[in-house]
Image (cartoon, rainbow, N blue to C red; front, side, top):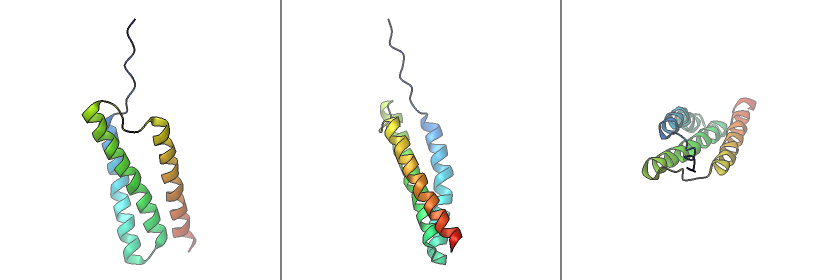
Length: 95
């Protein structure tokens, strides 16, 4: 009996999501530096970290056909970045 092909995230979607996170992340970091806002910098860095991780994963999928990081670990890292992002947003809007 044939083994089913393992499900692999789409590298194209990883690139799209990375762009959707990376551009606002860079704008937040730039705005945070110019306005001296640690909340903007923190939320921008969180978005940039996850965007970079998605690009790395997409490049690995294109090269080998398999993700660089297991999905469960990627999900945990994503929740960690989301937590840091939300803390940055809280800091931005509370002060």
